[in-house]
Length: 427
Image (cartoon, rainbow, N blue to C red):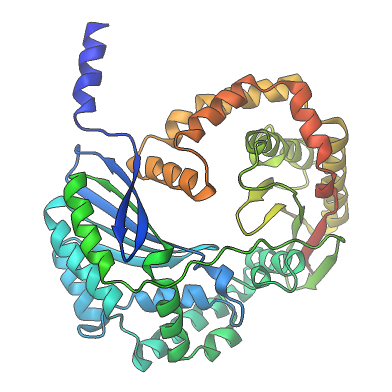
């Protein structure tokens, strides 16, 4: 026991649990999520801009992801090639990406190169390579990728399901856009996106590794002070289609692709999120042993895999799932999905299913927080959802204490998930 305590004390010198602090800059309190880990001389940093992902694609689909590609082309002064060479020479990585609700600038480097990496990061924010030449290059690359996806029927069916569920909203658009939409993007459009979204009012900083917290705060404060202020508006929540709809796309395929989804009335800050996590695992997110997998694959042999999950975000909340099956088994597979869902809502789960799920979720928890990036991501999600710090640990305690009766009451309340829409690709 004495040796274990000594080992914990030694590790404590190198590891610090993730913390949330604030930097005052540009008249804002910028949240900064820190975690120190001095076992390796590495630093990873993310500038996360809220309400700046594909949710902003109100006029041109794929616009946010297109802008991220443009931000990956270096500075106007140096150009893409020279900027990349300078980073590579110092083992610095800088990239940009767009999710549904956020736009992320990512930087990683050796701790000795942190100051240099910050200077390149700052240069990219101030002087991105927004030129006609870069625009043409990105358009050509993305059009080529989108052309190659025409025969990726998982991609086709997935996009069609989004267009059904979120009809008339920005979320109905393909996140990567279409060939037509990508071709219509102009240089002024990209510049406007960057001016409106890469701003300090939308910023959350996530940084971890071999860092000195106070030193990092000073350097970040200086960098952020040069950024535009901008404006953070509340994120709109989009409601799903209430009346089920089915769309069948005919393609030259040897299999049928069945994508399905429905409304799910759950808020991101709901007290029942932990019940939702357990219910989703039992229904279809848990792989082998889940209801869908057992019925579709094990009992009926209709597909290699079947999956369903509850997607709970700030901008939307819905159930979605998918499977592939033989062309001649399409109708039976669709019917099976509907039957499994109906049985799940009507009769709930069993004591055995609940206990097995508890064992898995609680037992596998160390694997979900073993790396610094995982811990930082978890803390970021807690902050982003508006939860108090450490809420993930409390959620596990709630799962451990969850009773079968309470879980089944929760499941029976959500009959809206039976209003299932289908997007099908078949021959």
